Length: 256
Ligand code: NAP
Image (tube, rainbow, N blue to C red; front, side, top):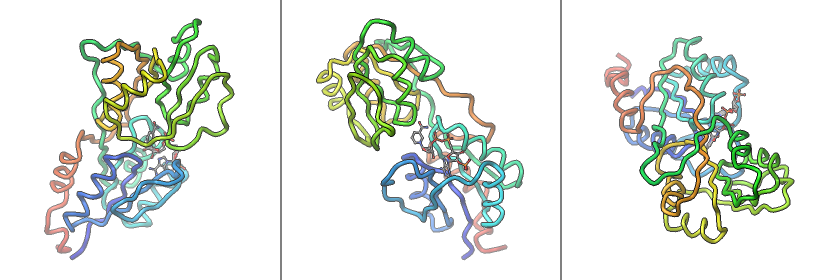
C-alpha cells in the first residue's frame, strides 16, 4: 500500500497525539519535526527530525525534496516564526497544509486577568511595588523579568534558563507538565505568589495554573497571541484526522 507522506511541525502534546492517531490508521507515513529546544524531547510515536529548516525557503525545499503530500503545522500557538514559514512554504510549493490550533483560554467569573500584548508589557504592568510572581512562560523570554528586579520570581521551565537570570530573588522549578489544580494551588501557596504571568496558550495541559489562580484570587497577566498565519485551521486532533481523511481518499493509498 502506498502511504501518504506527511511532514508535521510539532513540539506540542497535540502534535504527539496526532502523530499517534495518524500512525494508528496505517495509511500515513509521518515525519515529525522538532526545533530542538528541549534537551530531552519526550518519546514520539513516529520518526523525528530535529532543527530549523532555514526559513520558508528551506522548508519549501525540504517538502519538495522529501516528496511530501501534506504539511501540518501543529506547533505551539506562540511559535509564530515557524508558522509563518509553514504558511509561506505551503503557498510556494502548492502542497496542501493544515494548522492545528487549540482555542484560546477565555476569562471566567472569578478570574482576575490583565490582558497584555507581550511578556515585556506583563513585567512592566506588575508595577513598582515588590510582588511575588510566578513566571510560567517557559525559558525563552524569562530574562524579560530582569527589567523589574524588585519582585520575587518563581520561574518554571522544562530545561534551565540559559544564561542564568540576573535577579536578586529568583527560584527555578524544572518541570514539564501536564499539571493538576491541587499541585498548582500548593505551588502558589508555598511560594506566597500574588501574580501569575502566562501566555494564552490554550489547551488543557497547562490550564491548571489558571484554575489555581482563580481559586486563590491571584492576579493573572495574560499575554495575548499574535495574529495566526493564514492556513486552514482546526482546533482538535479529531477534527484534523477528519480533515486529512477527507483530503486523501483510500484510493490514493492504492496509488490509483
Ligand atoms: P519560533 O520562534 O516560531 O521558531 C523559531 C525558529 O525555530 C523557526 O524559524 C525554525 O527555524 C525553528 N523551528 C521552530 N519550530 C520548529 C519545528 N517544529 N521544526 C523545525 N524547526 C522549527 O518557535 P519557538 O517559539 O522558538 O518554539 C520552538 C518550538 O517549541 C516549536 O516547535 C513549538 O511548537 C515549541 N514550543 C514553543 C512554545 C512557545 O511558547 N513558543 C511552547 C511550547 C512548545 P528555521 O527558520 O531555521 O526553519
